[in-house]
Length: 294
Length: 168
Image 1 (tube, rainbow over the protein chains, first blue to last red):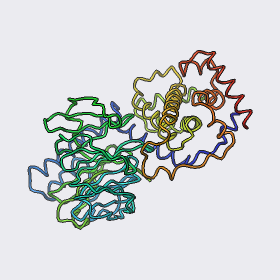
Image 2 (image 1 turned 90 degrees about the vertical axis):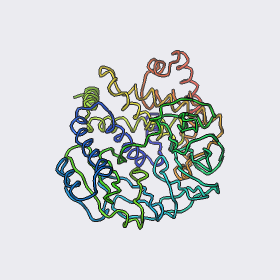
Image 3 (image 1 turned 180 degrees about the horizontal axis):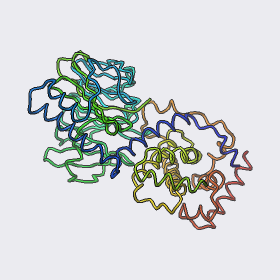
Image 4 (image 1 turned 180 degrees about the vertical axis):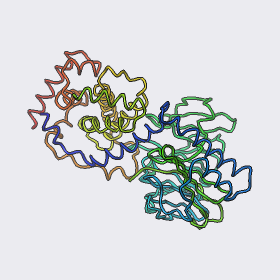
């Protein structure tokens, strides 16, 4: 019996193992407390603080970046985004539309959308433009689309087999299934802030309301889980982490640069210049996510 | 060094923050955890999610894990109970839930006669068969893992095996 059970073929078995290892190792890298994290956290914090302060308080320029180099040891500053320092793909929104950047640096323009986010496992992208919400394959093929007025801030959450997309439309919060079905109103009294899918089982969504409260709702049952949740649930992360948790990237708008920071040893920072031009954009591009190795 | 000592060493290393420790644990336990989930739920994508979530739970609780206890049963308890819950929920909702737009690409037809025979059993019976004959737990251990009386485990095992013999 044991041998028979062990011989049964599981579809996609090896790919499943490697996908899961990528997720588990990333979670492990983010875990705390860990002795090795103590060694890099202050350095990374200093590096990020310098980046942020440079953007906010001082004129942009090489001198500041040189300062960062001295703090954490930048190896090089590239004139173009030749490659990503860790496995995965970047999702970037620019004035020209939504782009995917592969690990080898190749870029694809998915279309003239203004906002986007990854599906939970990075196989699809949900993108928004003025009056349309669309689910796209990584090559830009439209899997489905919904006509809705003034679509904003789409966020895709859930498990591999059961997903939901939350988005704003003309001041309302709406939710639709990952297959584009079951679109429905969730709340009409919301603030203009990106909703956040909470980790763990089920489909729990945190969002801001006009009265200033933050609410957590189970979107499948409609039950309000928390009427006054902490506002920090909606705070965006200070930096975008790579899928393996070993690098982060932040955009430095004033210097028109992306700054990748390695969170461990050897400490490294890699800067990429002239970012706007590379994405054919007059405004500085926004990083929407760094998702899953294929 | 025995497998148990290996495992304890991996747990200790992972608790100290060693990436190779957690990777060794993952590589050691993933195949059977994933297979156990698949044999209960009969859905590759769901089995992947279930096994993955069990490992994520392990990572979250690593600091509190008692090194004196084996890691496998702790992981298998999570996997099998989640798989049973998932299979029961699927029976209730008749597969009409919304899915990831590409999930169908991952599905494959069930063409193995043993797998098909297992699929015909109720999820609780499948779980008992998997725990006994794939993961090789004793009926007493299965009763503890699933929180069932030992007599229930024995009867599910007997009825499950009878049904499999008739079908295969």
